[in-house]
Image 1 (cartoon, rainbow over the protein chains, first blue to last red):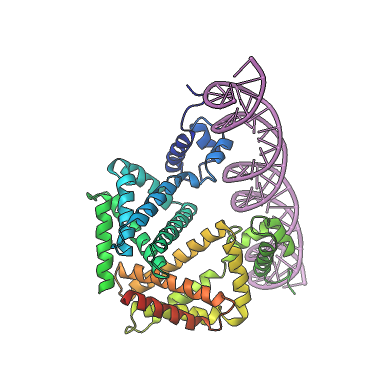
Image 2 (image 1 turned 90 degrees about the vertical axis):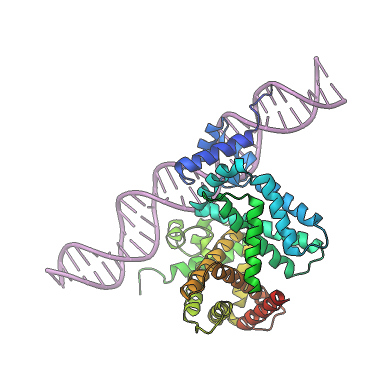
Length: 189
Length: 189
DNA sequence: TAGATTGATGACAGCGACTGACATCGGATC
DNA sequence: GATCCGATGTCAGTCGCTGTCATCAATCTA
């Protein structure tokens, strides 16, 4: 048995999401989050750079997975399809049925606060440049790489919104494919 | 003669840009900005919502101009061309030769600080939705309106980067047209 | 013209996000 | 068994930002 309860970061993230949902982001203090997690405010800032980051901690693993799939895609695959394959793979690992309620709650919190929306935009921009870099390493040149990455982000957002939707019955990879097909049809017109 | 020196907001913005450039955004306190402008910290926050916003105050006028041009574009014009016309008009009014140094300095400050980059992303996202709304009012339906707006933002960013560039000799509207043409050629391939 | 009103600013107290420095102590290492 | 290490606690401090009330020149009003 360790000196402390395990998974301090996870407990902090869980407490934060719960409190942000209950009282709103701006009405929640970091001290309250830490207290619910059985820790101190100082420890919160050792695990997360700031009060917003606690909602985006999982993003780096997501990004790494997408980038690795794009990097390992067969050469025959078109850039946009390689990027979409990355999104599908991410969906299979991160956006699964059991996490839908969590994702919904998290997204509701983000949607209700401008500071959190700013951070989300920043994270998506970072993901876009990471995908663009991966495409360039595949030999795609600019500005095609950057544009393809931005389109991929648009597909990702669309698919995620649909996946979150109450009435949705499809899984994330399928929604990625549908969104991508619709986009292709649009640009073909 | 008034009770106070005129243009308090302008003086604050000027002092802020200078200090951010001299010492960096995070090493500059709002009290310092206010002092250089001959005002108090409290007054700063009456003119600007927060320490970042002082660099983005002009953005609303830019957005309004772009939206109005998009709204008044002839019906015969394709959505993307209407959006581009808005960007060109904005360039003629805001991105003129005399302001190039100012824009460069401002952009250098933003580029050197993540918080400011977040705010800029947020402003561009707001501009994108405003353009998309204007296009919808012209009868463009989704998702074409949203996608066209995002493409317009990409064109704007590209044109702005080139306009800022030391070696550039072209004016902003021309760079908008060039960037748009390159983008069209890309999607046509 | 005297008095009321307005609007931009100042003064001040206070909260909360975030940081630096140092102490603590169970577990791993040698 | 001594030593080191790493996660946490404690505490003081800075700074962004807000609420509240006072000030006072300009302007309006009776």
